[in-house]
Length: 481
View 1 (cartoon, rainbow, N blue to C red):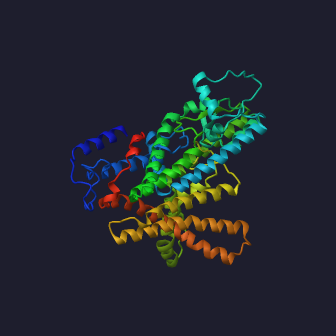
View 2: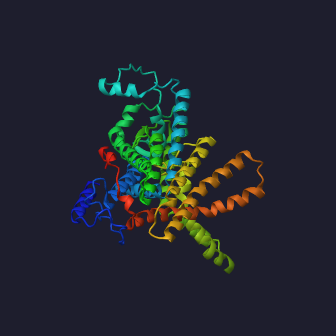
View 3: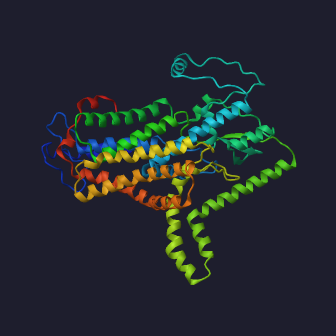
């Protein structure tokens, strides 16, 4: 990141002032580095707009994401690819990322309460901001811990379990990652000792502290304040600032949900299974075989496996045509949208897996999570409608922007109405299916609309109206990137 920053600064020094603020419109292919604010006290350049937006989007999609713990056999390249994929889907569908964060938050609360009620049989200490500040200056209080007592868990422990933070080992070899139900069953059957790791020790494994998180929060807060100030001064926003504003608002929600979740933990805590005789050894062999089988299945790939299974079912020429023109495109769409589905419904732990799935969260039977997440999706989509009356380089681009903004707003709205009807309505199938079909068909359109909005936001920088270059002077005083 530092190298990229230095390169961009060097590129900027190669370009001198080009024109003044009074230029009626900036017409170029995509001249991001063009300086149009020379000679104006309260002005900004295209580069200033570009850099502030890109820095904020990067903070919202890369720095703000809290990935799960990688498996013991995962290479650095595998972890990096997984992080890039997560960033890609955070840009395409950040509201789904908020859904995943909300599922993990409520799952962590459920795990904390269940552990403290049935295993620790104790109440976790209450915390507050003033208490945290006092302990930061004076140090934590000394707590006498007796051998027979069990420390209560906090919400950080609940996040740590969902991340795949506990790894069952047999004879020093990793056997499988423990979800909460597996951990609880092993503790109840006295097959393992109760975990003794504390909240402080978990946070020590985290690569993100209050300072690093505070920088991201400061950047997004500054951007929201700048956009609000421009509205108050009746100055227009650029299309790129509109989508960045939507990212910043969602990032505030995600960061609030994940504030107590450890970030970028690289190694899980190994819990050794007690020796229980021959049956335990057999179980260990079975787990090892399960892990190897799962690894082989993952190497094949979901799309290739499904296409092969469908192809093997071909028995007639008609079924071959059906495979070419229907099943193959359908599987391709399912493959593209598969991670989005996992963000909202990935709650199954594969047998013998050495890490949790990428978007795993503890199962939480509460409709509040679903409805709140859909409300966040509606909010995110509606914020793109802010650019409804902005100046665009062409009438066609403005029309496509409006259609795309309506699509990403209507899709979660339709899902919310369908969920309300299914949950609280009479359950008439003749009403449900006509509503369900356009929603399902609209999912690929949703992805296309998101890609167009991101692309158009950058392309629109080639032709901005003069008021877009006017800046709010006092916002530059606030520290930001």
